[in-house]
Length: 166
Image 1 (cartoon, one colour):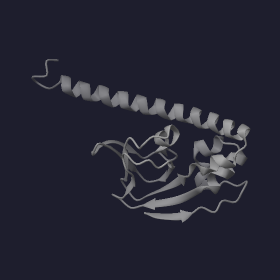
Image 2: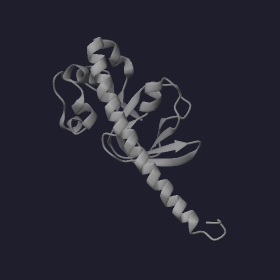
Image 3: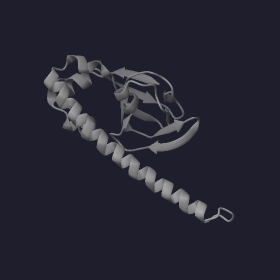
């Protein structure tokens, strides 16, 4: 893993980050605070990004590559969509990580450190949280549809198996 300080020029969003829906929806002052407290991180295939059970509060935005989600030692999802948030659930709940993340390819992520919230006014913080929660609700709804589809596929396969009673 290599971590690079992100030198953000206030009021400007580089083209790579401009393609990230979440960042486009945050007001400029909150965006400047987020990016001012972020770092670019690079992982090679197989490197650990987060460990299940850790209590770190950072979350990540996938910029390029693929990340494997691992729960109790078993792969449960592959994340390849640019702009996907990773590690956001533990960061929001203040709880330990519910899964591990491993680089499934050479990848780049934006590591967002929660300290940026301290620099926001109460109104800015509320506006940021509204955008974040709306974005997260869409993300979680999409993940639920993907998971439901996968469960239905697995149930169909089990139903086709001799001796399953289906």
